[in-house]
Image 1 (tube, rainbow, N blue to C red):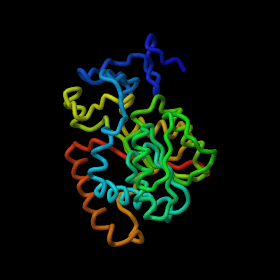
Image 2: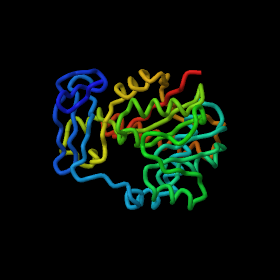
Image 3: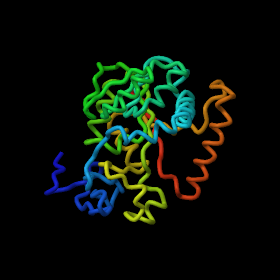
Image 4: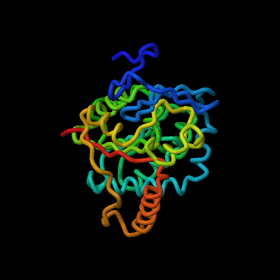
Length: 267
């Protein structure tokens, strides 16, 4: 597929009239007027995933782990009880690894940041640095892949999904979250909404565009469960209910800046 700058076409729908979208002093990206996919993003300030990129996650570690437990508990409504191997792509400081281990998974992380990997290892978790493209694992190695706010950073979304498909077992699950380009506040404010547009992002998706990428990559897409099953524990349920209520209010208000996709590799 020719996606060179001289002949830019949409990576999803092949529209040939992509529009320039500039966030001054931050990000240059192209928007497809047909499917709404933002793509081919170029940072205007350089990209650095050194230790200070992850500092905020470590300061809010307890809250991040609790939120990860809720997300993973919701996944068990579809995938069944926590068991087997879980890979967290873009593991940062290991909050999802900690939640997954508590719940019963054998958790492994990968990240492009050597600082993040070192922090995970200091917390006693297995984590490996990788190049952002080729995962250092054999075919069919994992039962679950999670990835929070990572897929918008990748060089090529199709290559990334193919690599996830490769390392998943048949019937394995993927659960991710990514910024929502269809958020009404984002659409209304455009490039002036500077807090939304991160200079490291090569993509910004809406739900339909990302689900189509998953479907084309031979994944079956499921509606993300709203609440965990009660068997996941009453102690976790009140926080899950409050968390979901808050997210629901944000959707109604049009300020839901992120969405989740849950998908399964065909068995």
